[in-house]
Length: 124
Length: 174
Image 1 (cartoon, helix red, strand yellow):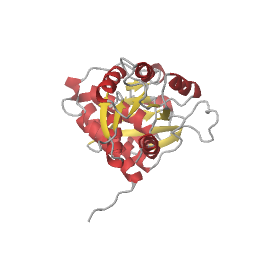
Image 2 (cartoon, chains in turn green, red):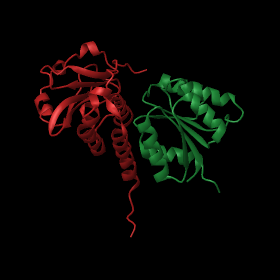
Image 3 (tube, helix red, strand yellow):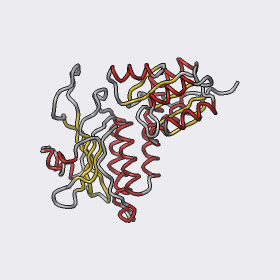
Image 4 (cartoon, chains in turn brown, orange):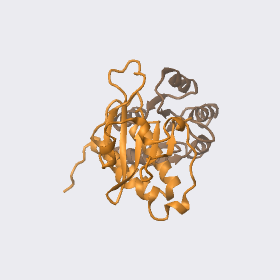
């Protein structure tokens, strides 16, 4: 059986390296990456990930817009999307859910919490 | 014999390894400042950052992110009593001044990090206020701070750094 695939999206190279390292060392999932919302929408169409883990504040297209785009497209409509941001205010989280995300995590990421969340969607 | 590594350890190592790799791979001051921003905002949890050089008498602001640079033109605007210890090379964690945050019992923290080159402090990185959800600094945070202290200077002020440098504008977080 093919490994589950996660699309990591962040404009921070450090965050992508850390995310990939956590996912690959702690789970059997495979990672693909994108560095902004536009690239994420394209990769989601091409790669058919099982889950998208995406930062909100990014150049070219932010995470909310990318989330909305993915929800409008047949091929990506059902993919679980977890948004990541430093902003934990309720209004900001509400905006995330309105854009169509399934879950929301605040930065700095608690790795244990992240792994548990991924496993809750994808299984161990 | 294979030695098992605890899940928590793997996660902490992932942060440190990512930061170490990012700093090592950064090319010149502009990219190093971006690496510092990524590490401080994404891994340490602070979106108000200022970097001061300390070899010019009054320690002027060199770069900032998420603050009004006009309010912190020099390092001594912080009036931090432990500043001399920082200049001598010690990392310092202080209570931040300003309005307390609603719903939090702990005061916000402010972090002073000496940037060291050849056993000399060449700059001070100040994290002005940690994010509300970041209420404490643990051992792995301190290891990240030590990494910044010991490795960020090379890319900022090391050999060949000046030729590459394009002074970055002070940035506000978006």
